[in-house]
Length: 168
Image (cartoon, rainbow, N blue to C red):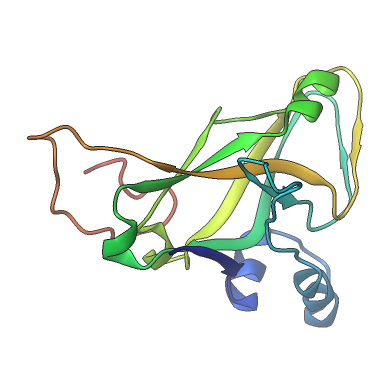
């Protein structure tokens, strides 16, 4: 069994990179973070929502600290992964995409040093600015079962957050 919840305010504040606002103002933004949800009962994914208004400038890349973590129960969720994928409407209309094409959130990421904070990097390759209002669905997460080929298993434990398995 897995579920979505928020990271702590302290972790979100550290990761969001927003400067010049008081803790009180930042807490208002943090409190407004919506947990991912299905759009319809047959939707494969759960939509992630913009935590603030963004004027997404043409040709730019923007990193979004969602304030969200995917919590798994460890042993029971081995063999599952959360894939972060773009919303097709934003891609169709504006070409907006994830900078890493597909986000892979491992089941043990929720235990990492950064509380498993899901941070999503988007690219706007178009020649137009795009308004992404607070509360708008901008990507989706889909939990998928997977299999590790025999002889490829690892017994290593995660010790870090984002990108921590790069050097294993």
